Image 1 (cartoon, rainbow, N blue to C red):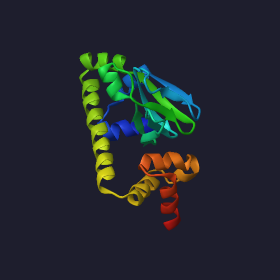
Image 2: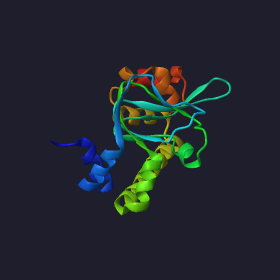
Image 3: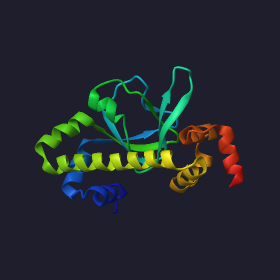
Image 4: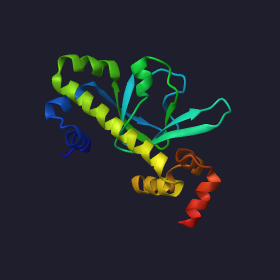
Length: 189
């Protein structure tokens, strides 16, 4: 039987059957309901999440109470407070499900131990970091160089049914615009 998760790891990171089996042995599959948080702002986590289905987001609530959406994650994504885990500091953001989600969870430090004894896992760790960096850089460039309509169109290409899956204010927050501006963009399109 075909495994889309293995296909992803093989195509993106050149993972062998043996390495994938090791990942499976340390991973726990979880099904989360809409609105569940994997980590709260100010909380700590050692878990790395691999989103198989559903939508998640990373949010920051400012002292003023304003909520900012840093990212919306769609399958297949790594969803975790990497900086918090690496620095062993509280997370600056909350990570929550926007829809029911299917995820795999791995303890980062258990994975890190394997990188010390298994060259394939160590190489995978490096390739995942490169992959996450490239995604982050691409999003940063889009935010800097594209207008809100262009960013909305990219989001709609990535998640075609987004308007029916999550509230408009969450989409607007992700695009760094107001819900009124989003409404105007949608009307113009």
